[in-house]
Image (tube, rainbow, N blue to C red):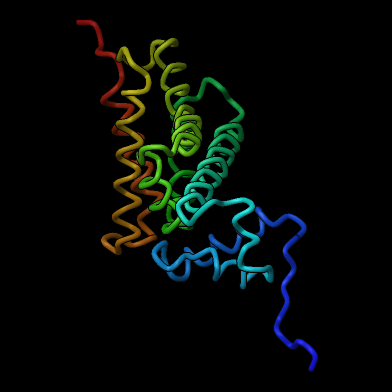
Length: 205
């Protein structure tokens, strides 16, 4: 009698990328707790053992997904800031950075939550490095403003953390339904304006 058992290929073109794409779709639809390597293997049409060639376990898959998210976020933040033609226009560049972050975090709420929870996990070195590279961009912007005398403060990273915390709070309020999407851009603009007002060097008396 012929074997009618479903056979799925062990090998697959770009399996790692396809698994991450499928994982992100599952994350968006069902949350991180429902992710499993076996289900993802079925979704992309490979044997249940195939994903382990790229991810040792479910935790490794989640870390890779978070790392990929940070790299994608970093690219979007850099592109948004680079679109501002005047490199000396700090307010416009900060606003572009903040808007791009909020846009990413609201369009990818579940992924952003995973990213933020993964970057501090012991052993998640690659995730932490990707996060540091991404958010190092805000420190660079603050440093440029300090060097031109537009901002005060000694540690650009610490100063940048203030505006990052602010936009993170706005994003969390939006994703939880506490504020309406129509208010988003206005709140981001207010946050940047108030930050710059508070961080500006005091006028000499």
